[in-house]
Image (cartoon, rainbow, N blue to C red; front, side, top):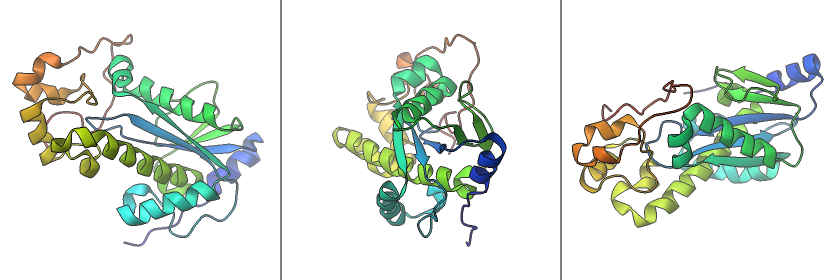
Length: 233
């Protein structure tokens, strides 16, 4: 299906309305996975023409996404990655874990951004960052699309490496997301050290339910987490 290539429209708007000069696009991957970290990439691209075919990582084949990530790492002005571990996700909740990973990525950039374009409608960063949220920013904004591709390829590589000692889970294929193979492995073998243990999928595993961590986050709220509600897929 044809799609419109991303543009610098949001970046130009931020420059004109706020005076920002260094603008980072931020995107995450791993929010809905049952295992592994949540990974955030912050990418600064300037206003140069992006590589051919840049778009949301989910619209690309594995081969093209991998090739494009290599190209992007050389093309972007700068980029950095931040991660929150499964333990941090369990302890903090997803919203706070996302913020932690994003701040780690932004702090690792060589120059602190004046503004951040955040994919989606929710600002999980907050002060002191100047944030512009953009729904489907990974398709429409060059910097966010670049962050999307780099983050996805890096996390997929990490999950494949983590899966070497847990072959039954096929992390190299599912990246820790729900899949029939992943479900079957959980039922037989139980969660690995890389699984998120506060999540509802454990409710469907009577023999492993005792491993579930209670949600006792300070604000008492259950964060919105896509894909974490058990085995209905």
